[in-house]
Length: 219
Image 1: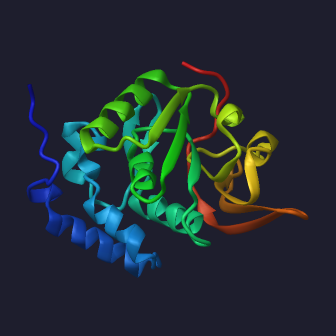
Image 2: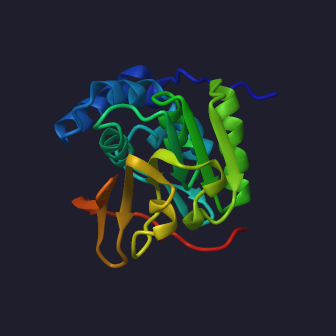
């Protein structure tokens, strides 16, 4: 059985991670709790071994099936925005992908429900949660645009792929007072905050973004 080094050595060592965290600070991420989770989460186990030496670069990396592992800045920024008004108790993640964003969330909130349309990716994500001892994550293989209504409503929703328009089905799964962080757009994408209030929905564009598109169907 292959032994996986969670602490990392060389290009995956703590010193390399510290340099990444410092860069994220310089780029504007200010939540030290989020930054500490980025520092301690072994991003190198979420990519193929051949790419592990690049795991702590601030760049997106391929994970197969035409999907990517988001760059650390994006993960940190989206997480920071989601937790801006206090840590939600119950979070829906749309797009498990490699499981890296899932693992970051699972260390910051009590319960994460994550959906993914590509079965093999989700199976790898599940195994990584077990490796890290994160047992507060529930998985569902389904069309992400529909969310997980049976488990809703959610205090917060994070979407890790970009629809052209904000899905109403996801807004409906937010609690009153809940927040969704989602990239929106086709040619031009923007990281967007959706706050559901008793009076309706408040939408705020935050900054330009670049994500794979949110697609329908499962595989």
